[in-house]
Structure formats: structure tokens, C-alpha cells
Image 1 (cartoon, rainbow, N blue to C red):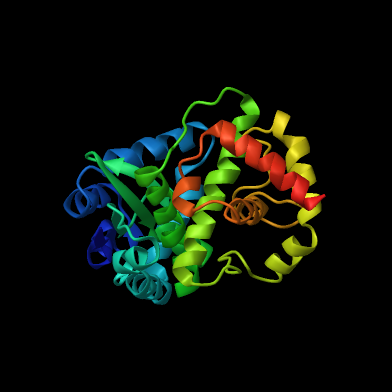
Image 2: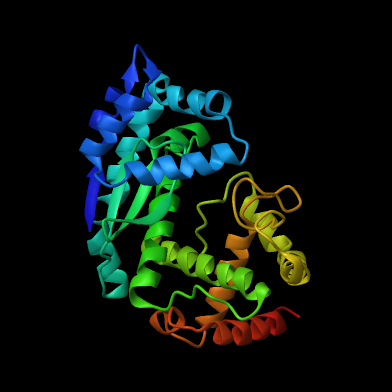
Length: 285
């Protein structure tokens, strides 16, 4: 595991306190070779989909320069969470994770992004989105880093499906893999009730409405798309609450773990996930 903090060079991407994309290209090539084109291609897709460079991108990027306190807090939290992280993972799971974790200035590509660069798995943590969302605390950074590391662990040691026999399997699989990552977080933290999303009574609401969440998820499965899904992401809402799919996924995985080991579960095929989900539904009725 390599920990890469590029914050010392981030401000070289600014000219007179304003973000300059040409200077950013120099910074990113020097800090994270191979990442530039990924960011530019992703930005291009978003602009083609209707986002505005002037209205949607520049204010977020310029804010990194202005919000010095948040920028420093994010960098400090990054180091607190990643310090001896592989040793912590090894002590819990008996294995280490081969990944680079980088705090960098991206082009609004996401607060947390798992990808591959030059053939290596990389977790990219975009400080511009972290500052915008005010996810600078240690607890927020735990959620970003541990959750994404859980996905890498799953992909490295388990089965990572990419093609699905049924359209509904895509989102059932997402529920499964997000649940895996949530339980990975909980085990590293040492608290089975830990949810990094738990703010303003979020978990208490989910606990009280778990049957409504699961019934709605089942009803939506057949027609769910990335455009209309309301379970995964802080930008979607289920009865006014974001990220309820992560809560449901964790409940689902903890149900499976009552009779299976974690390393057996991460090797489930989609047919096994389907069967386990039916058993899980039966346990809630």
C-alpha cells in the first residue's frame, strides 16, 4: 500500500488565486503520472452531459484555494486514517491490500474514486469535492478511505462480477458490494453499528424504517436505473434520507455473516447473492 499526499503542490495549479487548468496539468503530471487523462476524459463527459465549466467547475476548484483551513483539516485527517492502515487491515483480516491511496486536486471527478492507473489499483481522493462537501473530518475520511479500500479488498481477494444475467441483478449486486465495503469499514473501526453516514439521526431513522426500505428496494429492482435509483449516493433521496442502500447492504451482509465467513462471502457469485437475499427477506418478515 502506497500513501500519496500531493497537497504540498496543489496550489501551484492557481494563478492569482484562480484555478488555471494549464498549471493544473503540470501539477498532476508531476504528482500522479497517468491520472491527467482520466480526469480530463471524465470532465469532458460531464460537460457533454450538460455541466458548465464556468458555473459548476470553477467555483468548486477556486474554493480549494480560499478554504485553507478545510484544506489543512482534510490533509491532516487523510494522514490520521491512512497511518498504519495496512497493518490495521492485516490485524483484522489476515491480509494486506495492494493499492495506492492518493489525496489530490482533481477536476471535480469525485471525493472518492477507485480506478486503475498504469495497471495499478488507485483510490483517488479529490480534495476539491471533499472541501465542497465538508467531508474533512477524521470520521468523514474514514468513510471515504475505508469504504473504498473495502472495495479493493473485495476485488483483490474475491469475485467481482461485471456481467449479469438479469437487469435487476445489477442493483442487487451493488447492494451486495456496498454492504461488503460497509462491513469492512465496521470491522476496521471495531464497531458493528458504525456508519460514516450517521448524521442528524440517519441510522435511527433507517433502523426504524428498515422494512419500508427493503420493500421499496424489492419493488424498484425490476425498473431501477442509474437515473431513477434512490438508494446509493448522497445526491439521491429516499424519503428525505440519502445512502439508505448502504445501510440496507450492511444489514444484508451481516445477515449472511451469521453463517458464513467474510472471505467466503466476498467470493459469492450472483446466483448465491440472489439466494441469500431471499433468505434475508424471509428473516425480516
